[in-house]
Image 1 (cartoon, rainbow, N blue to C red):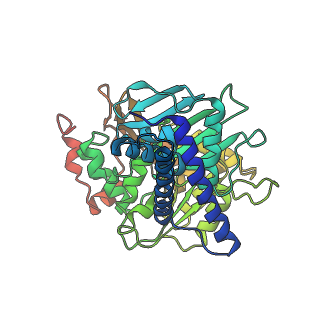
Image 2: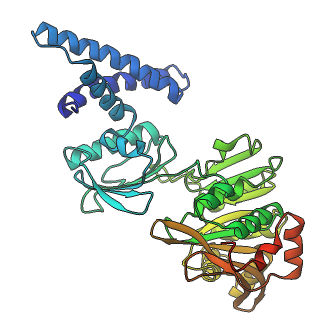
Length: 434
């Protein structure tokens, strides 16, 4: 039986206040904050004290103490509220849940790994309680992030790497979206096992990374762009230095430190409440070039940082990669021109296209059909012709989903990829390798 919420709130408040006192004391003494693991241990010790105090109260009042099972359930609920996301936490712990959508405290929808959607239970007793939970979480994880009428937007990375985005005031009810990240899907072999790529694309993409081709991974929301980019990153030789640039840490390159011992991670930062201190993606891209990278990887290009990224790709940092939102590989090119225009350079589109043609080698496009995410197309960038990028569709979308070999690659490109392990015979096995 689940613990009564009033009791959970009472004990969680007591434990939370004592934890907050410890944080304040460490700040006053100029001691570093406790590591997450140590804070969890402290929370458990404080919780044990509160449970002992509660048991004494019941005995003093002549009541029967809680059973071991009920006390364990109460402890789990309190820890979920103090160190997790309360009644949202079970959904975060469920490996079958890929995304969580909350509108108000009682409208909860779960998107599962197989693509289906189901309703969830309410995650709070009221919208006000949901907002309070988000504020507590922001204070714990958000490095001073605020969530109120003056700051109606909250963007956090949770401890498991999931991304939480919430709104209030500007939405009809408090809204929460949590996107889960599957860091265990970290190699092309694993993506091949799940059908995102077939044998030919596996061989092609691995060779493209080893040959230091510049790659843009494109697709719609939830199509698997970050997952594929993470897998491509893990094909980079371990002796190379990688610098990642992200709006929010999602690639998780630090989780694969044995594969990438020499790496740095940069994350954009919003302005503080005085409107100062903002660090943009474009600024990070410029910083990255001063950090002696072998490869620069941008989690998602969606603004003026596109210009710096293209310059990095065309000035010796071959093997760099990024993702972009696009509904087809071909539409990446006009979007790049629009993003470069956001950098206020006043470059004519013809000049931008020359830069794109000299910087980008391949655009890989992902599609999302129901529960299946697949690489559906690949374009090789050949040249620029005025306002048009010339590219070959070397993999084209197939009627059954996924992609099949289409226009032949240029001879020099194919030779380079074969030199780095691409099995070109797979291009001729059109009748069954997929």
